[in-house]
Length: 344
Image (tube, rainbow, N blue to C red; front, side, top):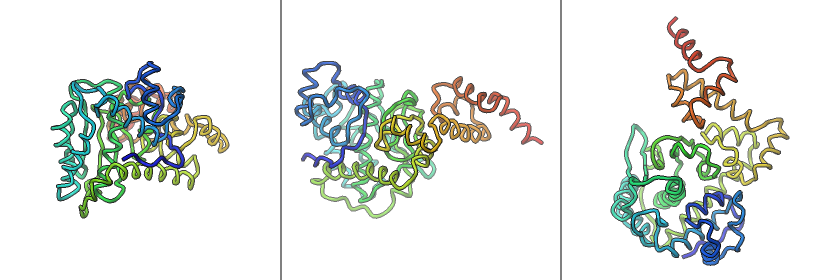
């Protein structure tokens, strides 16, 4: 069943990245066939700097999966036919709790999607779902994982009967500079380390009664839940000052200006104008938040490399330059001063 088109297209992912993960390349004929099957205009993917809304992305993925006969869109060693994910979800419905259901989701996915490797493990008071292509990981594989985790998360929300908050979203270090809303969409901190993607839940958020709804409504309901979460973020923005919104996104670990603008439903130029009207600019706000976090991490004893990764710098050297520009001393000097002060 096709989801109903949204009344207002909501930005979700950049056109350039979408073309890449769909495997469309630069072939006009194949692109036109997919656009036609998805019911989209021929120029929908023409602007590589543009973004497409959730409804358009949903239809494009459905059309390309139908065209390729493969839910992994050619990223695996052999095709995984359409409908595999629904079989995985059906298996989850036999669980006695949401935590067990997510565990079954991973176990069944490992059996049916053999080119993927999913794990679901406890760590302290958290539960971590990690997904990775164990035999190959490049930009396109990483993009597929970041997109796939959205319907997965919405499936867990559907199974539980409520919107589940994510504690953190973890993706590959190569995605630090990504200009996609996916990194900002769930309103949780984003970290850049490890392989593949990881959804981190507080264990207590998965507790409660477990009574899955009928499977026949699954596809439509997870689409509705996806829209509900994005609209909730936009409604939250409408009730707050844009400076507060940007500051909150930065403190959640989203350091890319384009990602924040898109998550707010506006262009990069519009975001800059809104900030300028309030005597703010993005770089100064980002530097202030990074500096605050850097000092906290220095006090906690983290290395320059670890701090750079946590704060979205491309490398430790970039972090050191930024720190020296703001403080007039290197992180190593600041670390010794902190240590000497603690010893007194």
